[in-house]
Amino acid sequence: MRRHHLACALLTGSVAAAAATAATEESLEDAWWTGPMLAPNAATLPQGHMLIEPYLYDLISNGRFDAEGGRHSGPYEHDVGSQGYLLYGVTDRVTAGMIPRFSYNEPAGAANSSHIGVGDVTLQAGYGLTQFEPGQRTPAISVVVQETVPTGRYDHLERSSDGLGAGAWTSALALYSQDYFWMPNGRILRARLDLTYAVSSSVGLRDQSVYGTPNGFRGHAYPGAGFTADAAAEYSLTRHWVLALDVVYQRNASTRVSGSLLPPPPAEPAPLDFQSNSGFSYSIAFAPAIEYNWSSRIGALLGVRIIEIGRNATATLTPAVALNMVF
Image 1 (cartoon, helix red, strand yellow):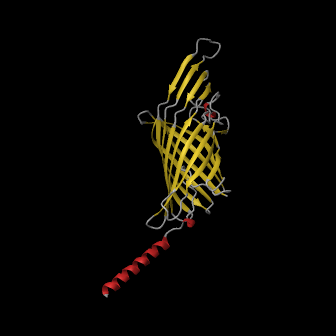
Image 2 (cartoon, rainbow, N blue to C red):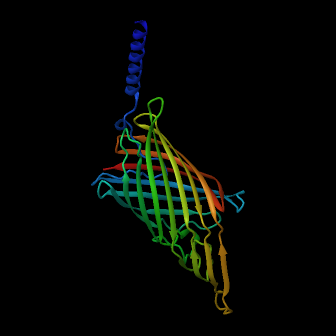
Image 3 (cartoon, rainbow, N blue to C red):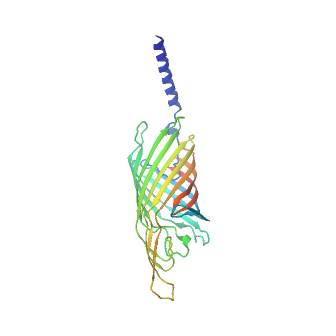
């Protein structure tokens, strides 16, 4: 009889403890997000809804990594810019939109950009393969195709700081995923893993360009393919406040430039052969951020991207602020 009462007491206590745990678990409706600094959302927008998310950043360069990964300090340079996401839910599973870019460069030892200029524009469309459902093991997964249009200036430059684009048509295929995890204290951790592979067309070049060619150059650049892996997490401190972190690995194949260099007039000797090869590059970036959400549809983000590991890459510190709005 005592064993029976003891078993009942333990069962009752277990049920009560489970109920108490469930009562303290944060609900999805109570968690508000803007998204981390870098990783896009795998969940598609509901049909008829729009997302607008402008970023303002200052890309500060202060060094470079050589072919062996050694870091060499350099003068500070600034690239002040804006990048925005304009996305629309075509259906519940299809989201389409664009990413416009604007920039103003302040290089060290050279003239600043003559004005704020337009960078390359990315068009994209995503299809939701799966959707997250509470109680299920399947995360939200979507496949995204992107095409970057060379709308920014890239060659025939009077000053190098006016080069704001790559000049190439770049096609990218990405796989985005997102899942939710409840921590022991009941708060939610939202995690994302985004994988992207991109290839670019060749670029015809004249004179001074973003590929380091001088005046008098005639030829082509052949940008290498790129791969990016972005693992991100957001921790819901409260309904309004969220801590976020991205860890990004980016690798690019070598970019080759080939052509000839014409001497300035009035000299008329034979053109000189001009060749360059950047070598493959990689970088690892960390991007901590803090989010504040006024509601489930409007929030702001303040973060910084730090690149202090790489090869044939630039060491940068990029503070950024963003406003996330869903209508």
